[in-house]
Image (cartoon, rainbow, N blue to C red; front, side):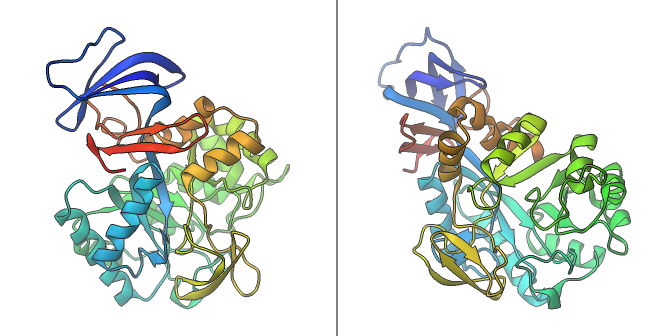
Length: 374
């Protein structure tokens, strides 16, 4: 297959051609011409960009990774593909341990048995969090970090746990980070930790922050907190960019501060892709009104957005270009989970995870490992 037209090559769009064979990008050059019998995709006014990567999403279209069946996971994966998301870290919530075991088995078996899916692993958000900054997590199931439980869950999931979220001030948390940071991406999350404790976590091996500014103390001029520690340590930071969780001005500030370490995530819950109404997240009732999801007490509970919508927020409300924000949805998250040699950009040798998108941000086609899915 040969794509010809405007292609995002990492920093800008260039007039060139991209050849994909056997699920991978073979070569990129404006001099390429079609081989005999080769399918040619003329982009015309459309653009070719890398598939989007969402490292933090709980669910969509009425389903949740914490409770979903194999068939429901399949439907969620199809929804993500329709939004241009070719790589997904299915994210679990704080819940009872037996329920966690079931979720680990179901997601792991799906990943091992379904061909050409777009799941890249499990993001374990909870139960190793802070009750004080619990957000929409059920406090009755929040516990201290447990190596025994972590090992059992990952074994049940076939080794597919990718990201583990943790509040570093809890007993045993720093030792847990030190021991597990080579096996998982450790993300500082749902925590009242001050700057010093956060720095201790990063020095122990944590490399990421879960939904920056949300479920943590803010950035103070005398107490930089987790945001300041992330900046000082060189950590990656997730950010929910729906225009609800973070003000557009702060979004622009974070972009300038972190740029190549900024990860646009949705933190979407089951209501994503559906209408306003009452839903469930982590066993707790969630009410969605005008796209904003909250618990009964008004606490924001995840989002109803997706990366394509968030691109619109960046462009329409922050005044940024598609070229500026695309790395935060593609190569930055790929690097954050050490998959940049496989996904995240249009380069020879990488997976042919490609999205044809119009200049008005309408998805025209989506390819996963060179196979058209949308």
